[in-house]
Each structure stands twice: as structure tokens, then as C-alpha cells.
Image (cartoon, rainbow, N blue to C red; front, side, top):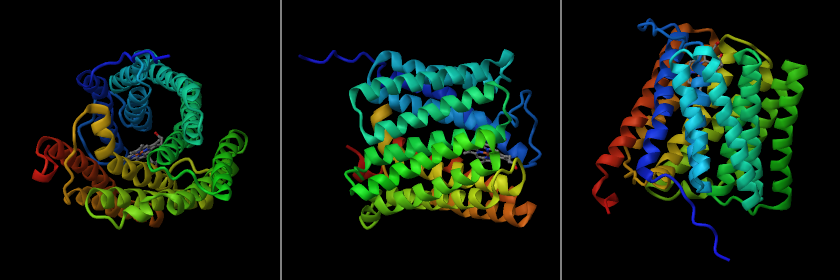
Length: 366
Ligand code: HEM
């Protein structure tokens, strides 16, 4: 029996679906700088208040939704990036009538349903872990809709990204099959993360410390099992990707240790440090490393690798060290300049990637 031919938007039609997510990223960066105290022109809408949702639900929700829709290859699946993208636009516009929260929540519900279809097609450790990530995003959105403050929702947003990325590493790098003991350790860390999220609803401090322990365990597991440990010895793109992955795992570990030590803080230096060790150091290092691999599959464009790609990776890590040091030492200039440097690293990443697409180096041209 032949499988039904998938109906899906062409690659060109995927670009407009991603544009709202890109706008959300820029708006979130603006809001983040305002929250760090930089005197920028104040936008007419509350970008600073929506910084977290714009980043996680507006930008990453749209990008991850698109990636999974392409993987599933069914036309209805593109409603996921459409919903979160429209939600992103509504958030940028100030979320009239709460439409930003509602639409991004619809996107998260769509991603959970998309994973039902993926699981029916393939039930494997990596699809289950990514499905749990989608459920964590849905839970985060529902808690946000219910009026929970950002600091209580943030661990759920973080779990969405950590579980999605951990699942993708299992899939992309074929770290599986691993030994039975390693598999139990991985599933144990995932279970600890879910337990921490649950515990946090009753005892926020204990929940955050448990989530931190789970992030640390996952970081150690990924650093030990990922093929990046071997590919880092190869030249060119494989080494760059491995450098992104291994440095990202280090930041996941740092975020875990900070959460373990500081527990349930709601604002201030330790809060900023633990959040952004994870959201910038881990998540964006993963994005830097995966972009040259994922973009060809999603948009059909090749990204020609150049050694100058190390510039945005090094800038991200150096400025994040400055920011986290500023956070933990109460040194405000370090925090503010580090945060500005983080934004510069992300902008440089966008420029280098666009350059790699538009002007690939001679060897990368087909
Ligand atoms: C690139 C530069 C970034 C800057 C300048 C920035 C700035 C900030 C600041 C100042 C805070 C408040 C911290 C506090 O209350 O002490 C914050 C919170 C937060 N950030 Fe970022 N951030 C950046 C990147 C990111 C990224 C990449 C993500 C997610 C992928 C993210 C997600 C969040 C979340 C979820 C919160 C907490 C929720 C909230 O209070 O709204 N940030 N950010």
C-alpha cells in the first residue's frame, strides 16, 4: 500500500510563515535591552513586559513549529507556525484583548497535536521526549493565560526548549542506541525535570532546585554521549557544529548549577543569570550549530560555512560570561554591556548566516 502523497506549502511559502517569528525576535531583543536599563526609544507597545513570551512563544515556538511541520509533511501542520506567528504579531502590537497569549497558546496546542501524529508514525525515545517538550510549552501557555507571573512560567518555557533540543540531539546525532544504563540515566533526568516542574507548582523553591538538578544531569549526559565529542576533531563545519553543541551543554550545566544553588528567585542578578545561561548560552549555541543543517531542509537554501562563523559563537559566550559575572557580583555595567553584547552576537549570527546563504564560499557553491 503506498502512503498518501503529503500536501504541503512549497519552500518559498515557508518564508512568509517564518517572518513574524523573526519580527518577534527583534522585538524581544528591543524589550530585553529596555529591561536591562538601556535608554532606547520607548516603543508604543509593552515590548519589555512581553520579552520572555516573544522570545519563547513568538520566535522559538514559530521556528520549532515550522521545523516539526516540515518533518511531518502534512498541510494542516503548518497551522502551528501560522498560529504562533500571528500570536507573535499580536504581542508586538501590544496583544489587544489578550490575543497574543491566546494565539500563541493555540500554536502550542497545535504542536502537541502535531506530536500525536508524529508519535503515531514513529514512537521512539526522541519523539517521546520532544512530545513532552511540546506539552511543557502548552502547560506554560495555559499558566501564562491563567495570569501566572513570568518567573513562575519561565521554568515551563525552559523545559519546552530543553526537552525539544535533547530530543533533537537524540534524533540528529544518532546518539542512540546507547547502553541500557545510559538510557536509564537519560530517562531518569527527564523524569526528574518533570517532577521538578510539578513540585514547583506547590513549592516553587524546591521545584526550581529540582529542575536545576535535572538540567545539570541532562548537560552531563549530553556532553558525554553526543557524537560532538568525536566530530569536534574533524575540520570545517563538523567542528563548528560540535563546538556549538559542547559549549551549549556547558551553559546548560551552568544554568542547572545556578538553579540548584539559588532556587526560586523571582528577579535580580541570580534570576537573570540562571535564565540566560540557559536561554542564550544553551539555546542559542544550539541554534548557531543547527542553523547550517536545518535551514537547507526547511527553506531549501544552503548555508556556506566560513571560519568567521566562530565570531558570533565566541562573541555570544564572551559577552554572556560578562553578563553572568555582572549578575552574580552585582556589577551593573558588566550586566548591561554583557546584555548588549548578547544582542550584538545574535545580530552578527543573522548577518553571517545571510552572508553564508547569499555569498557561499567557492567550495560550498554547487
Ligand atoms: C539577547 C539578549 C537578551 C537580553 C538583553 C535579555 C534581557 C532580559 C532581562 C533584563 C530580563 C529580566 C531579568 C530580571 O528580572 O532580572 C529577562 C527575562 C527573561 N528573558 Fe531575556 N534577554 C535576552 C535574551 C533572551 C532569550 C534568548 C530568551 C529566550 C530564548 C529570553 C527569555 C527570557 C525570559 C523567559 C525571561 C523571564 C520572563 C520575564 O520576566 O518576562 N531572554 N531577559
